[in-house]
Image (cartoon, rainbow, N blue to C red; front, side, top):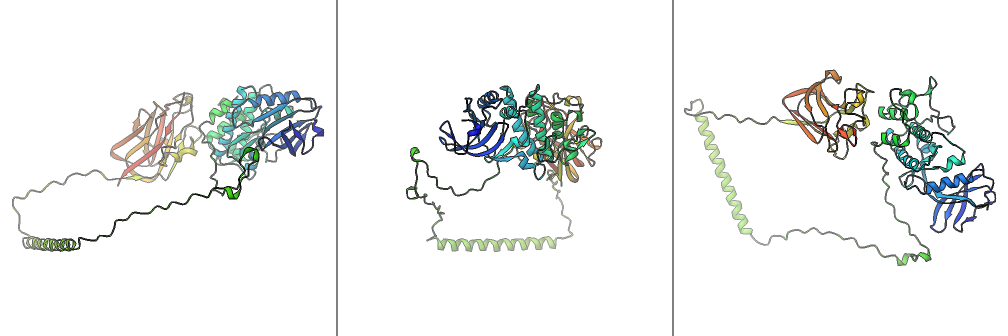
Length: 501
């Protein structure tokens, strides 16, 4: 059965019934079909008898079928036969990246999280020797089941007759284009994909931060290292999807949107499954159990005792009032008369009263670099939740790769306050490092005075000032990074500031 002879309703392998012709080009046709055995939609590629790369596309599909990453489209069947060749794969429903950015760029972390998932999946494919080479926003899908899917691995490159002598670098640049598109809503490529083209300056694409305000500096740098190395000449470009995946590994991953509960429709399964159900056979819902509150029974006795007790209380109150009046009269009568032999009792000292100061704002602070350090995560350090954190980028050495002398977290307390105590929770996954606490009324680094030093940025640390240190700004300043998973990274789970009242 050749592709040219295939019509809707045709069945392949006595199982896959073709329903809708989705796309046709170059002797290959994509169909939406039904797997009648498993009763699910599938995607089917059929081919003309003279399709020139039939062996290559079937071979690529078979390699893809052995990959286990759920973010890659699953291939179910690939058959090469005279007049009867096809590839059957997963039918994916959802929003493509093109759909998501039609109205404008995504939230930066959302865009980065989607591409991070794709980069990890593609790194897995490259380990098996399979590249994509045709990455566009249409290939990245946020599915109806709230997961990421990367479409067309291996197969699309053969269908479009695309090859590369450097497949690792080609796919890394492709992922960089997807990240650029998500951050800016523009496409940094020559293809007409229905998106605004990325603006160009001096013959090169502008960086994401030049196109869209609010793109974090670290994501701008990652995008440039993947796609625009000429924009960051001092940094080494990424050459593999694995390197890009590692750079994006700390980005919070996309989470499903909450779905309101709706009544489940009645499903009539086939008789062969033995699950056919009718309305009369459905079990009735269990009765609602109502919890009754147990109340003490009303008192049936003790009335006389209650009256006696009340009388006694009234008499005691009257006696106390009389004694107080007599004592007051004596003290008034003796006013002005010196009292001999009375020694004043010293007033006991009390602890200094403090109050917690909530920061007006908080930001990642990198005055010696690009101005900010993971500013998108800064609020996590003051939300009171141990499950969230602010952290620096990961560096190759404790001294920031000799790129700068420090980075930190800057808290604006809203006004100058006498800082009495600072507690910083650095978490338990790091060790080592050096951190300074700085305070002052200016946010300039050199204007902030060092009020304390922590020599180990691990666990929860507390600084108590002998005399309160006044300042509007408090800086948690890493001068040496602790170790973290084979690299170096500073982490702050929570900061709490107490000031004297």
